[in-house]
Length: 87
Image (cartoon, rainbow, N blue to C red; front, side, top):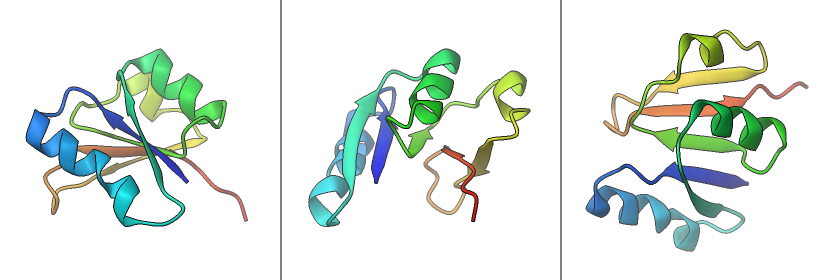
């Protein structure tokens, strides 16, 4: 599993999120520059499984059938964007 972490998080939060890759076996964390096209390309090209970002995605991205956007309020981390998995 590869998780992209938006590099606009404050340093202390960004560093903690990046360190998740050290804590969980099979999890790779990559910093990403969050952009609408980047979200679509990274997820649809299967370079990333999830993206965690404090930024909202546009209505265009929200309307794509193959993506799921979930707010992460208990963590106050922003939003999780992922491909919809079939099966």
